[in-house]
Amino acid sequence: MKSNPRLRATQAAKEELSRLGVDPFSVQIDRIVTPTVGMIGERETILAGTNNYLGMTFNAECIAAAKEALETSGTGTTGSRMANGTYALHHELEKDIARFYGKRDAIVFSTGYQANLGMISALVGPGDTVVIDADSHASIYDGCALSGANVIRFRHNDPEDLNKRLRRLGDAAKDVLVVVEGIYSMMGDRAPLREFVEIKKLYGCALLVDEAHSIGVLGEKGQGLCEEEGVVEDIDFIVGTFSKSLGNTGGYCASDNEQMEALRYTSRPYVFTASLPPATIAATRKALELLEKGQALRHQLTSNANQLHAGLEALGFKLGAPANAVVAVIIEDKLDALHMWDYLLKHGVYVNLMVPPATPGSYSLLRCSVSAAHTSEQIQTICDTFASWLALPEDSPYRRPQA
Ligand SMILES: Cc1ncc(COP(=O)(O)O)c(C=O)c1O
Image (tube, rainbow, N blue to C red; front, side, top):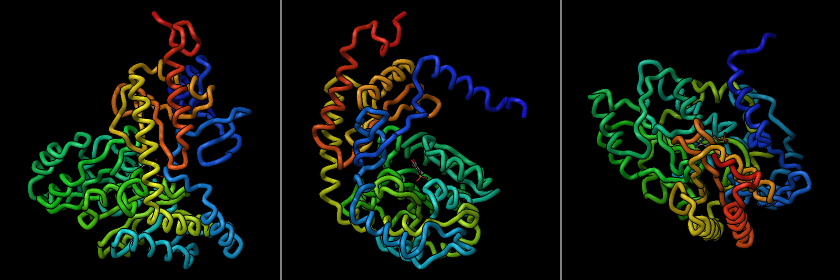
């Protein structure tokens, strides 16, 4: 096949990184030691760039539940939920999710990505309008694209802008689906959810909230921002993922909507893919049970987040949001960010490098994510490693050559 012009820009960007000797998108963790430590080559590395917020991946009860399901129900379902892939376990997990949120119904998808795709594309279609926060996750954008609906973006976390855009729609605003997130994954900032709920009530439209980064992290029961803000009942569709605080894979939507059952027949990302394997479901059910009574884990997570946020702030770094499980260090220059990320990795600290256009602005981010499983010593080591980069001489290979 001839060289594909669509891939050339990406190829060029990748080659530029190779020339710099930095490849942030090909990091391989050779061995996982604990939820917060991995071996990269021979180097023991603190994992501060996962979404393992509660450290659930190595939980003994979750592993035992997964093993049992693996032995009793096999490795996979080999089919879609609508064909041969619905086991009693799938329905049990759906009941758990519905009960967890106090909602009438829940649907489980094979990933969090598919939960957004599946819900948005089933709820709106050509001729409808979906109004989304401009900084929405790719799965929300892709769900909108799949739906064929008219997409309107409002300024990130700006209730006034949302209000303005709905007002402009006149009577049609009541049929709109508004989509926001709880905690935003890049910067760790929270949506002004109560204000969004007021607006949705004003127009009578539907509100879908993606709690991917807030389930397990916020709220007494860990339901997320909707619980923390006291608006669980007001959210029409609560979407989320099992791949972060629950330490597994899969996605869900919980809702009081009476048409959830019908949605199963129309949602292509639900119908046309294999269902979750039994071990995944069993471990997720156990993790959800632990998450719900996991106040101590949430307190530990908050304490760790405060320590990291305070430590990095004291070093003079500009941070994306108040202390949270996601602590994003804002670096204005992309090359600085690349060199700094590389330095951290070579010195035993793995964080996420985010560069434009993946970031909300023109800056780059070193996105650190905190886990309840991090020790205070590990958090201190992360801060010390950032500090040692600041102390490097100007001619260090880990510094951008000065003009
Ligand atoms: C806000 C948000 N929604 C959905 C997803 C997709 O979840 P998953 O990785 O479980 O498919 C992510 C993943 O990062 C996310 O950040």
